[in-house]
Image 1: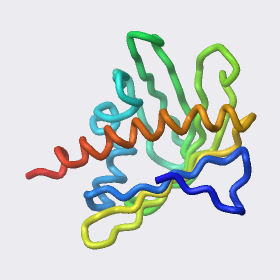
Image 2: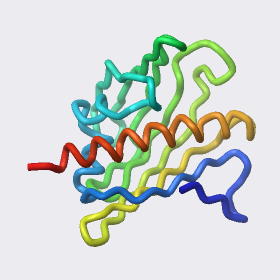
Image 3: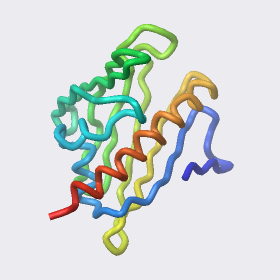
Image 4: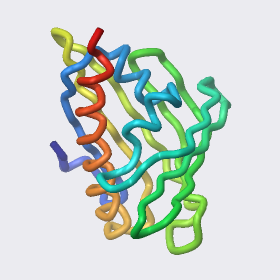
Length: 156
């Protein structure tokens, strides 16, 4: 579900989604490369590279690949790490083009209720409303893959 509120600016993206998995697992999906590689990227994309130094000031880098668009590398630095609760990091595409090396800040919170987790994903600032809107489909598609993988990962 995507929510736009009166206080959300045109340069912000907010996606709130409930996953049928505990917060500890959802946090691990974002912080463990073996998990991250399994879901990162929208449908039709694979994530062959994910390296993470998950600590405040630690860096990460990754790459998603599709036959249609080729390789898209990204990287950033962790700003806040609160296990199972909150993750804040910078994000930048390392390609050429209009969004190359433009840094945004992603804040993700995880709130568990009865074994299910509400993930609140916030990304800002975007250079334009169009750039923001171009990320809605990508993140939504990735979160579809994340939901499916979370079901597999939580099985004993």
